[in-house]
Image (cartoon, rainbow, N blue to C red; front, side, top):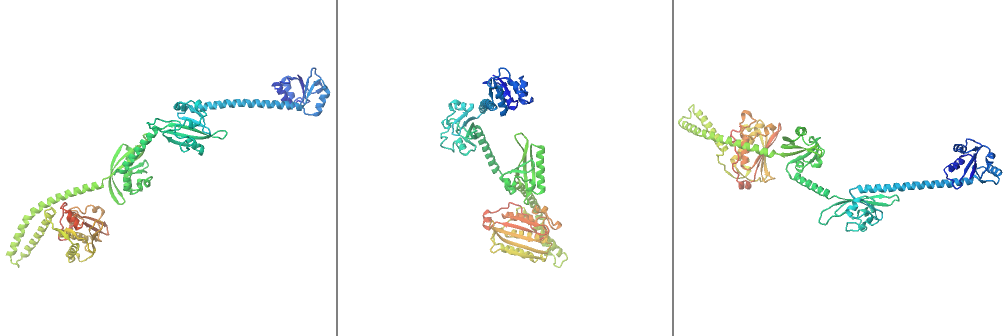
Length: 631
């Protein structure tokens, strides 16, 4: 249809584009020209680009031969009336409103075609997404089942088909309860069914079961399966569930074995007597066992994060730190003897150290295993001391026997001379001196024989008060004790003891003499005797306010021939005290502070226990000399 377009505006250009795109196929217009007084109007420019005639005079354009249709797109009523006048009835006229309708219809068709194309594209994308999703699910080693909000199976993966021997076409659309391997129905017991719990709570659920929703094993086998149910929302907002299941039997067995190994390790750590601790490479505690808890006096939780400097004095901490640095530097296995002080007590430890490594064989910690050998070391020292005493006793016995015979001759001849001499003789006095010194030597010989176990004891049940009073009476009148004041504290009805009265008196005398010497013969000595309430025996204590005993001497004061008095003593007094007390089944100890004095404690068992035990001479007893000044 031969057509002239009047009006070259944007609307004209839009209609001309539809003509070019053949979107007005119903009209099949043949463009004879475009009319507009403005040659640069969009429709005029587009027409020239298409090779169509353009006119500025409407009358000239409408006079063309064969004109069949005039399309008015100016939207001006006067222009439409002018067109009607010039054309008359020889061509149809389509005003701008009708052209707009065609344009709108074309726009709608174009939109529909675009939407259809997008829909087709989206459907292709959706098919691709579903295919990719299915490939993803099929690539998983776990069995996967996707359920909708009603519990119907939406899809499954290849692993599901393998373990159930059911194809996806057989199960899709079925309720999950129709294929569930558990005995309970999924829609009746939400506590057992993970999907029901997810649909109820909206939260993911993980359970380990002997028989899962998807997989099961033979009744005579031990199998475990981990089932994970996870929620997800569809585009419509419905809550669906993805259920995955895998066999974890090996993991459960490994975890069980690991727990068993950990339980056994804890049993060992909790029962061994060794002091076990684990510290990081920074020296801070990570773990201590119960033995270490008792040793350090704190729990493992309290020790965690602390360093050895927090638990030990600087000197001991320095020793431990140096040994830790040695094992870090040298590696392997190291053993050290460590002398430590903890809470005022000295300990001797044999500590083994090893480096602990992680799975990459990188060092991560130090394990210390210590044995407290303090008691065994002291026992060893006491054994050596006992052997030394035995040797001294054997020597003393030999000396005593060798001296006894000549002393007897000296005493016999001295007595004969005294009987023959006139008492007024000048040498009578000298003979008396010889005889007295010989008697003194005989007493020493007897004491040496007693020390060498060749003397005899006379033990019997004794009340303690007469022994104490007799001992004090022996010293109170002595010139060496004139400036000494005694303070005696005796409990009411003190228990009786089973002892040799002379030996017990010898013990008390030696301690009193030592107290006097420590105060240079001036001061107060406190003597106490009371019931030993913890064990039912007797407790003696003798306290002075003298010079005290240094820490260096404290460990040696009971050794034979060790003395702090120089030329005034021979080191036998306290050794005799300890020997006699131990023979009587008791013990002796001392508390002392330099410059403030000392207190000696003697503990003896009650008479009935000591008599029943029948203590023998199992320790050397050193003599106490009766001139009261030799230790």
